Figure (tube, rainbow, N blue to C red):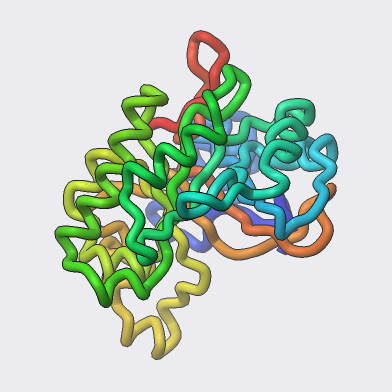
Length: 270
């Protein structure tokens, strides 16, 4: 899979395909019935491809990345002491390459750290968001061991506090990265988190035709969103990207989710 190589939607039912073809004709496009980039842009709900990176990707040529990517998330910190060694280089590179990027924190509450301590570490390293950056911050939660030591309410409290502190600092809702299985089993849908955070969903291999997917009926359907009405970002797998050696995580924004405000700042709608 390479960025920009595939359409964003699959096969529609006949009624939806017909409506889409009519809309394409009205916009002067070929009536293919496929919701590709040009179609979504004409309808005012563009979808953008983005990546998330850390030191694992090594040195990145952000000028090349900026030619094919609409946004990025860059790892800044983890737990209460770890700083990603390439954060500052990646942050500067993204600015110079014209990529609206946001910093993210890899949460380690499984180590007994408080939400306040982890957020303050992140805040200290990031400093402030620049006007040319994507106006949000990310929180990555994926350590299953945490569930063995805490209740659902305690887990929600921890994440809600981190997200709320970040929102007070940035003036924007936090973007919460969480896998579908983690959201379902460990967070039980997320409850009030849907009020304090935007959903950045990780769901790589949903295929309704497989027995495995059928056994895990919450994959790929409405329940995959937990208590959210919609996802804002969706991590769909890995890809190859110009300017990066090896694979990198591939994400798509929901239609119309990435917007440029009146002050020229890139924001996530939600």
